[in-house]
Image (cartoon, rainbow, N blue to C red; front, top):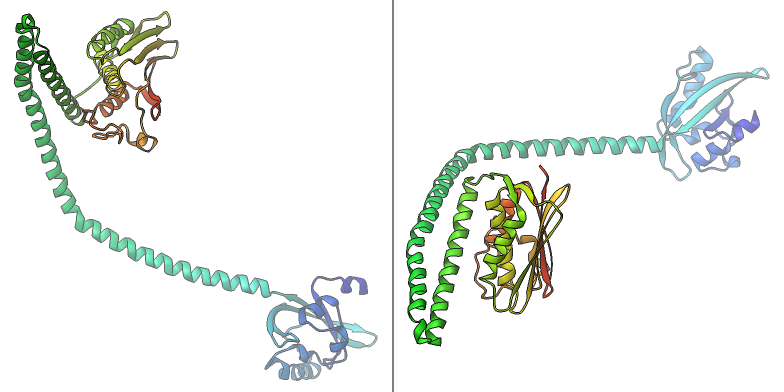
Length: 389
């Protein structure tokens, strides 16, 4: 029994019927910060703070006289006094034992300081949480009120924006069509001037006619970009997939784009696979490829190669356009498909920043994926992948 008490985790103290300490185990010594010799033979009240210290002996006297016990056999929370004067909470269980013709009281002490600290922390956290909930509730109420106040203003703004959008669409559509007529006339006149002046073989005339035709071509391309953007934003473009001869379409595009390539720029087309037919919208696909090759021509120098390839396999149709031009700065690559965005290294090369935005939309409409890899001054590779339907 002594071995069990000596090694018990909780404190164990025995006192006689007058309150004098007869034994104390190591755990109790550790709890109260006393050595055994400092407490044995002293009154148990030395381990109690006031007012419990002065009341304890009176309690024992009443119990001896009346036989009525208030704490024996019952667990209760009490406060203890350590040697350094600090107090702490603990659970106390008291048992009465008849031993050698006399009464001995055994106290079992379980220190609950940590539990009380945790309980206090929990209370503090609960109070903090309650305040935070109240604060956030008030914030949400204010937000809801602000949203209610802003509702009419937002509705009015949306209506105005809708009207402006419709006005912009009508203007872009009208301007695109109205500008085409004079541009066509300028283009035709430039071609006629070039034809009529051929017998004179005048280099200056040829040079200026070329500038006129080139400027008209740039303006026409800009108008086409704006018209495409207007149609895309208005949701007017819907893909019409048909069985398309990819090789034939690509060869036609290659011949057409070779005519507008720079001096000694060569477009090399190659097809991989035995299958030629694929279910796609040929007009949207042609627009995508022309935009990509046009960019390759525009941003590559003279005496360069532009590689254009198609592949049809069991899973996909893959279109790739590769150039060895100026490349796209890494910082600009994340914005590449945004409307009106142009990379910082394009300089005075003409363009609207709408071509790749349109390509991205067309590819998405046809359920494809558009990816690219680019290194500054090392060229760019664009890859479009369309799944088998």
